[in-house]
Length: 145
Image (tube, rainbow, N blue to C red; front, top):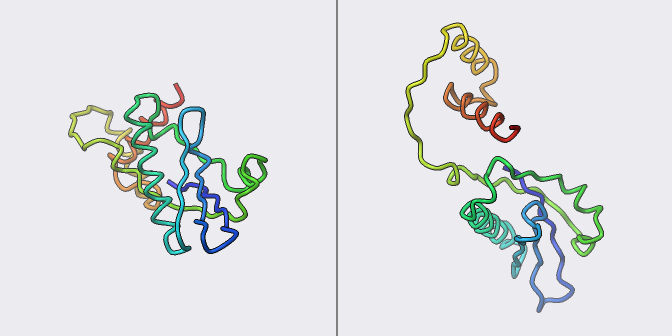
């Protein structure tokens, strides 16, 4: 998933680069970090994102599917983030929060299976396989219910 990251440039050499991930900041959580130099920004923010999401998921109040990011332009326009003078997007693999794979036996009409398989073939950049398609469809229904 892509996350917007705000970067606060240090005023001097004795101050760290301040980092924030607004999509993971709310009344209960804050996803902030710091880096001593620009090379440390991406690793520091990736670690902060993973730690925050782990805590959120373990609390039982949040699930991976409900996480959304409004985009850095939306956050940069908000007063509470005005100290962050530059923004970038970082892609963080959240698959570890999915749980382990488990096989199930499902019966579906053959015409529906063909339609699913055709959609998977038409969109290989979106769907890895039939199971991935079904998992995305199930998540969509569960989040929107």
